[in-house]
Length: 327
Ligand SMILES: NC(=O)c1ccc[n+]([C@@H]2O[C@H](COP(=O)([O-])OP(=O)(O)OC[C@H]3O[C@@H](n4cnc5c(N)ncnc54)[C@H](OP(=O)(O)O)[C@@H]3O)[C@@H](O)[C@H]2O)c1
Image (cartoon, rainbow, N blue to C red; front, side, top):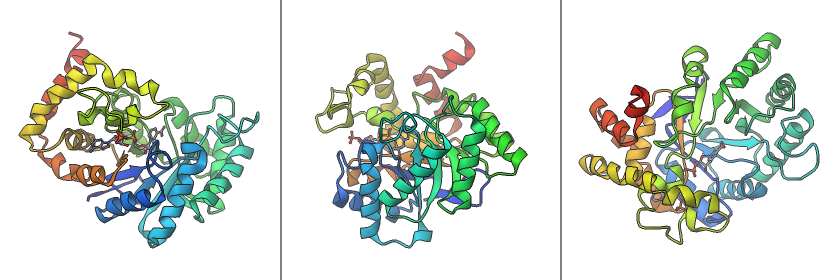
């Protein structure tokens, strides 16, 4: 495993990390979580991602119980969580980053995770109805109180991130240090466009999510939707359209010859492609079973084998050269 600095912070994160969205509590119980997290940790993963909203708090409970069973030294790993959607429907309790909610929410997350602090607390989405100054102050206080070490943003616009950084600088507060954006072969525009200036000008870190586009990039949907897959589980109708889309599947199939040349799986190639981007601090992977962790963690060894020529061929498969040239 290789480690990269989380932006300009002194913290180093494994370039491949593990998150719990959809999986923990739904597909993965505490015992399976222990097995999956142990496999990741043994491969060198030191960064585990969660969110208050995942399985309505129960994903944090599963991770907390698993961590307790695993008994690792707290200094040897990082846990991150995210706040925004909330767990209740009250007027001040959902889709918000107001001060009251943030301060109440972090206590709930820490209780479920059975931790004294998280390493990064993300604002899971921007809240356009709360002044950014109010959010920055609350996140600053949470850090000052020792409940989080750093804070970050997720899917905020470039303008909102700059505003938060500048407000923090102006008031001498702890500002955000990392963004959590989507980044994979299908969805790369924002990360490779709008966000680039944060990495170059502000040294902002990035922990990217859905590197396999929810499994589409593993090729597992090429012959339909397997019942035991993410798109095959209940309440996943929103995902079914993209994993059965003919254009998407044609791209995945075209990638196969490149994976064969590199003697790796489609999952490994797709993860390795994310790792090639120097602005990525950590690629957050997801896994519903331990075999996937074993397979995915080998992507670190594939990344150095992807030459500029191969990158160009991959871009062609995904039509990137056509869009950029305006052909
Ligand atoms: N900030 C945000 O808004 C946000 C949003 C989404 C995710 N995230 C974070 O990013 C993490 C990763 O996102 P993600 O789960 O969407 O990642 P992903 O890599 O796109 O999808 C992971 C899923 O793909 C399947 N899979 C993974 N490896 C495989 C392999 N080798 N072979 C076959 N199938 C494989 C598994 O699902 P099945 O086995 O069930 O098919 C697995 O749960 C999340 O856990 C979360 O921490 C953050």
